[in-house]
Length: 410
Image (cartoon, rainbow, N blue to C red; front, side, top):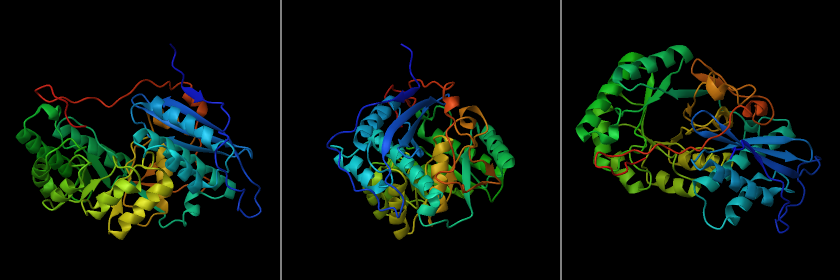
């Protein structure tokens, strides 16, 4: 059966959906959501899930939901939320967020929260366009003139990793990069080999980029035992990492705090945590120095701002997780522009592959920074015509195996 890459629904709104009265938005007329469309787009690897909300005033908004793996499930959740939202005024963003989150039978997981996040982005885009302002102006204004970004490097060997880092810094002017410390097939390697190779890889990258470029190191939650993460931290500490990201699984905050008490590298985590409720425990336990919520799955802009405020009260900074498409980058740039304790944004230059085509004008890096959009809303537009040449395909994260055949972590 041929798989469709443009998915929409045409159902009417639920009769029982609660309504707020029009406004108050000064002398502006009431606005109503008339349709919510989804685009499931293939990127050559994972899929990208886009949301487009249409209104009776001709103003449209766009957003991006996280690609969790069962991406068609996310599309179906968005289509179901459409039944709740058609007829509502899209500028009541918190009210509509509450409607989706509080009326869902149980607290959402990655699929439901991704759907809410993508819809919430599109609501902000509409609000900005209706006001004639960029979204950051609706969030208290800018606190910086540009946004610092970093990109992840490749390379199977220490030498290849060093070359990749050096090339990225030279080409884009990055002042920071991120890397995996793991050797190939690390799940099958003995502990000592993994630990030793981590030192070789990070050391090679440090030598290649010099003493002042920041190097984030991402364990990617492949370790379950705290002591194993401590060993790797001690092995790479002399190379002054920017942070150690997801050194262990994210579920146990006490274990993360134990790790923090035994290492001298800033710890970062949060991409697998949802909503302010999960971040509350991570932040209050003082288990990390840097929180990394993902704006496409943590609940959207408002929720990420609340998480950032909680972190600020505990003297922590925010480095958003951002592996998705250039639209997610644009949304994150508005967050970064208006958030005091923002640190740096994960980024991938959209100059090749599907990334260069999904937006009409993607946000480009210059000397390690990106400019802040000044057009109303997000300041970017989807290139819907290009989607016809980007069919989705079933995707899931690759499975890792240990030497005994058991399933490895993440």
